[in-house]
Image (cartoon, rainbow, N blue to C red):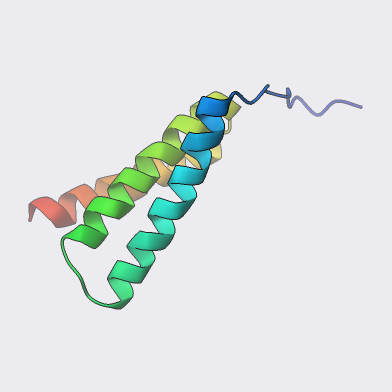
Amino acid sequence: MSHGATAVKETPLFTIVNWLAVVTVIAAAALTSFDITPYNQICFFTGNTLWMIMAVRWKQWSLFTVNFIMNVFYLYGFLS
């Protein structure tokens, strides 16, 4: 039974983007825990942007939405 999800064939490029997003967000969390700013915000923004790319690829709009909203907050914090 299908629930509307369509399997997306992963290419090597998107596998790299996926893992780069994971590593970037983990690095951002580590930078935050050591209070290393603004690099933590830059890493979070980058990681979330990569997750947005993957969300579009996977057609996961809830994943896109949460990362988009988080990027708005990071961008606001970075610019203020």
